Length: 111
Image 1 (cartoon, one colour):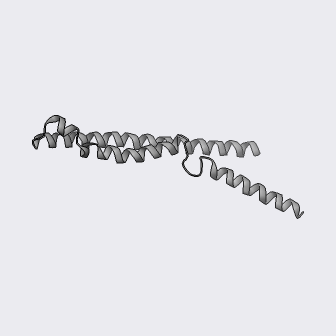
Image 2 (cartoon, one colour):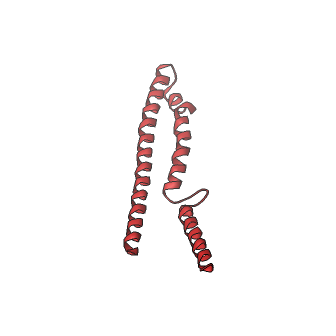
């Protein structure tokens, strides 16, 4: 019974991990596609508005979305790939185990 429960828990954890990875990959793919579209449109618009090609490409407006959205992608990647920023990757699970052990020890004292 316990091994079935453990396998079931491992399966749910693996499934959750795959869901997180899939979410990151979709986020990154959308980031690339949307930013390429925006960048090409801005460069073409700036070029036809009289800027040289060099000026049109190396304009802060061209890269601002890449930069600011990239910060979000960076933190999303940190979360998904195991670089937790605040509480840690397994913090919640460890805390649950600790509380359950404390409750079990407390109940054993009163038996």
